[in-house]
Image 1 (spheres, protein in one colour):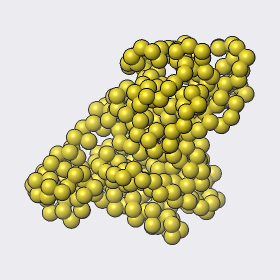
Image 2 (tube, helix red, strand yellow; image 1 turned 180 degrees about the horizontal axis):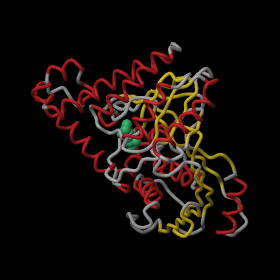
Image 3 (cartoon, rainbow, N blue to C red; image 1 turned 180 degrees about the vertical axis):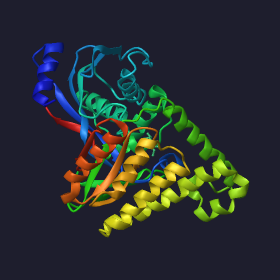
Image 4 (cartoon, rainbow, N blue to C red; image 1 turned 90 degrees about the vertical axis):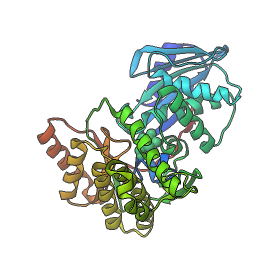
Length: 387
Ligand code: GLA
């Protein structure tokens, strides 16, 4: 939806004369470094072109009213002067959570009328929830004439996700959505919350393919993986009290502890510690323009997520295996939390069109579904894009 069309729709719903502001909030894809963020490790995401756009205008009372073009008959409404709690419709919890966290921080807020449109599919594993949280926060701050740096804003939105969406996520998604930079991926040290921006050359293209898989246990499985990592940390802490997170443990230490950890905890820990190494190596290879080596690290990441961390599904495995057989592909892997969602592939620009057509045909022949796919550049993080 264009901003003009969104503006028309906004006026139809809310009336009045004053123009709304527009906030664009992107989705994200993670190139490598999966399930490492909540282990104080490293991740390498970028903000992508698909996004949510919010048209927002200040009200002269204390009400926040938000509507989504995806759920036109399910508006969200609450008061800034009453305690903000979770409720129905469920999509509104991203709005409620973001506003509640700003309020708890003592940011002076004003009421808002808001209409939200997506080019980012909700539930597609591209961080539509973080895009909603960060986008809502940016809109509320702008309407109140307040500012906040992207990194503290990301932490606040992570808290909103924990408390209002009930997902004990790490810090990656909200950070890249808030602080992405056009033309760059971000190597993020999740312990110090320090981003380093890495330029992405024009000689390589990032392609996202949706597995169209659904998995109802996904949320529970995510929390379970976090617990399994904590079990590993508890073991290593007994051996070395300086260990705070799996970030502090080396692959050699994990290998040496195989028996003591037991098979499941061993494999979970091995994924995390080797994935941290792959993420850092990937950043180096990308910098050197060695896309073949970077791509191999992506395949290795996928294998580790599949076999050791057990968060992949057959559709994702099939997409990665297929990508390996197609021309011009450097590497491919599942991206995000897993169980559903997308793969990310690094592809030679000249091969992109054929790659997307071929992988869609092969996937369709196997699963009977046409997978959503797109090539994307890295974009800026969330911000006001005008009136
Ligand atoms: C989800 C979470 C992130 C991260 C990834 C896995 O996207 O929101 O914090 O843990 O899964 O890397």
